[in-house]
Length: 284
Image (cartoon, rainbow, N blue to C red; front, side, top):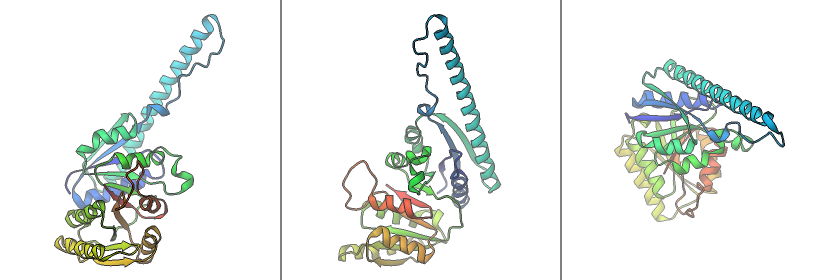
């Protein structure tokens, strides 16, 4: 894949995992890693008028003090962001990755991804699968917005890194799952890994043939992939397969084959992100 990874770090518990997964990808593909930390101005302390009905010079002085406080907060946030990036760079270099670039941005995180992803081959972000945490932290609260905005593959890192040896591709006959099969077949990231392709929720003759075609595509890419036809609800059947087969990485489409074209990612995708304790590669 020799190219560029765009890795987003926010200093949370997931940042180390993002770095370790980015290092794993970079070592296997030769990609450069660009680390981004984004300071969202909307999250900065507000400059609301707290002076009330104060008269004469007191109100002016209070506003000056509030402005000075905001400036100190901004400088502290900048220093904190640079420290997060330097720690992340150090972790990547300790993992054997030499080509690392850091970027500190003052912007909405989704706007940053939208503007910068054209130069990247993959986006690496942390996931917050537990419902209690999903909306609390910055990347978590913007997770679906980031996935919707991206046109490149999104690697969603789980809380802790573990060696990746076995890959599951969730196949449903849709365009994004076809892209997932082709991506795994062609990308050096997956060389030498065990691959399983699974069709969940039952399938007609057309989907079954598609599963055979997926196996052939992977074979052309050097993978002797196993295929599975699973019964039951996709999120349950796929989740069970992840556990029983010891899957280390799930590759799936961000949208299902028959999704209603709304502004949300597919329900199966969302369920897998929330419940799976392994990293996920999402294809658009």
